[in-house]
Image 1 (cartoon, protein in one colour):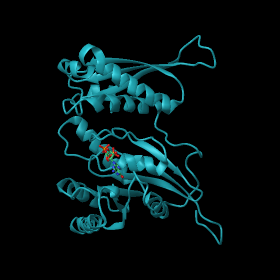
Image 2 (tube, rainbow, N blue to C red; image 1 turned 120 degrees about the horizontal axis):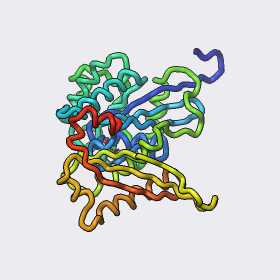
Image 3 (tube, helix red, strand yellow; image 1 turned 60 degrees about the vertical axis):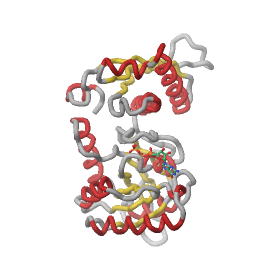
Image 4 (cartoon, rainbow, N blue to C red; image 1 turned 180 degrees about the horizontal axis):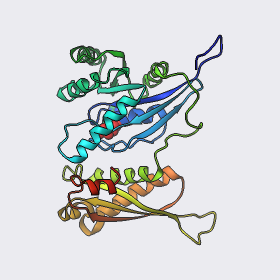
Length: 311
Ligand SMILES: Nc1nc2c(ncn2[C@@H]2O[C@H](COP(=O)(O)OP(=O)(O)OP(=O)(O)O)[C@@H](O)[C@H]2O)c(=O)[nH]1
């Protein structure tokens, strides 16, 4: 479809953000969309599923695909995640490479840059994130370093854009720069849709985020959550509904149970409360959350278990 004369054209397409763990991809997705859809946390690699945020504008619809971080695969799960990332890169209309303004570019960035350089057809935009954490001089240095990172790894940046998802600085400008890279076409999603991620997956992610939040480095990637059942509680008055959610929290080893559950079950209780509040905010309805901890031995290495857990 091409626009003719003075008829303004509409564009729609897909963008994804890549970058090291903690680079600020999820937070940026949320800032662009304007509500909490992707799961953020100050722990690396919390984003497992491709959560999409949708930016609705009069002139465009930008569909943001939030991928897991690319990393050196050590387990089957690691390999699967990397496959998901590469498949996403080849499909989208633009890739935003997020680089925190407050961290020097390093081997992790060069690894991603070299992988990105292999995806020749998709335009790449460098997004220097978290600019609120540095002064002007440090930011200027980082912009030069990012320019160099591209040149040294055979990557041509379409743009280099500094943003702060926290202060909101330049987030609108980033959207303005991404839109012209989308193909012309009608909106792909109904207005008002923020994400097409199934509710159950988002709920599982909220529970996993809460479960990871308290524990130190004991369990970084050893927790998976599956929502088994979501049912409105029967016999409730219409003005006081309650949604029963049953979810299983899987760990790899019996020895991890104590960490997740905590003394006298206090940790699990706190995790449940935190997750329940977030789920209630997401769904807009009171929730009763029933959480069970189960051992799925070495689930990261077992293809059958991985499939059951949704990977
Ligand atoms: N000050 C500041 N902090 C930010 C900004 N963007 C993200 N952060 C913080 O940086 C941390 C990581 O942000 P995320 O958005 O979860 O990073 P991510 O790249 O999605 O991380 P993974 O899911 O691990 O790949 C969080 O603690 C955020 O609050 C920003 O613009 N300014």
